[in-house]
Length: 399
Image 1: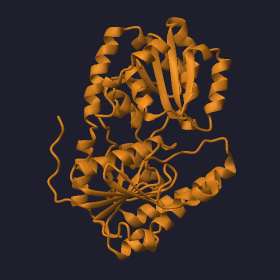
Image 2 (image 1 turned 120 degrees about the vertical axis):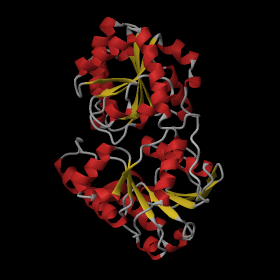
Image 3 (image 1 turned 180 degrees about the vertical axis):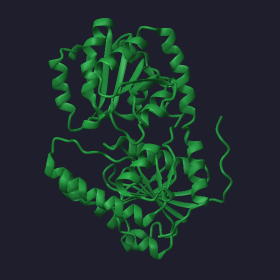
Image 4 (image 1 turned 90 degrees about the vertical axis):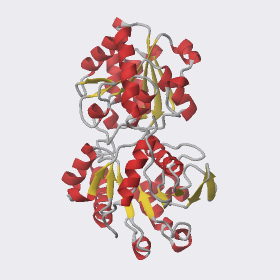
């Protein structure tokens, strides 16, 4: 049952984000779905929403999504392509251009601004005395192959920028207790500045009705799904190493992988080395319509990641009626509740046994399906939007 919306007069709310997935999705899957879900949820609750975003996912400066006006501003990526992200220049240039006088006119009448990036250029917002809410997803311990100098200069610069931004804005929403703890421990942000509100899920979009008999016919009776950006912390090789063990017990199991990222090709090579390529299909980046079908048709969704700020794909899978398996570390282990199982982080043998135990027992699998659906209902966007509205009503700080 949809929760009753908080009673408050309509507000003018602007979302400042480079990650808005209209008219097409880009590569920041979780951040994009968060921005879209929050915007549409606030509009559905009766508020006047505007979006200020980049050109990454669209080419029109002025656009609309379901009646929500969108303004796109240039950042360094739109001019220099992937070179524009050096020293996180795309964040800085986006923030600078979004608050430039000609663009700021688009949303200078806002009652509140919500942003999901740290950019530091706050003078225009401060001058208009508009409350600013900053959203923090997660603290990423970079372990990429880019090496020591990348971590020392590039990542350290982002840390500095984020710390400066959060200390200035002070109204901080983060998506899990783990991310809140990171803000306190890594950045020294006072606990009083931070409120935890999880990411919502669109139950009309992700649900068991998306089941596809064509997908089932194509991949067989036992399907495992992985969908995420392939960076080090996602630990996809752990799942790939588990597959030979699984196939010995259940030979008709098929692993479907969607996403992309810097480790995508190395993981394809690893699959060949492990001789599982016949039972592992690397689809790459796919349209959301196809992803919804895969969520609802798969027997299990597996996220072997060792670190997440939230793990939005877990709630999307559970909302689709698919049990999940993730590592036994928060916040993933807390989010899934009894809608799936956990395995010992980075232990591919334990992961294999957890997968086998569910795939071999249809009665248990059906029980976990029901539990997964019940857990997902707790993250319905209508409920999460109410938490945002209550937060805005009681906002603490001005810049």
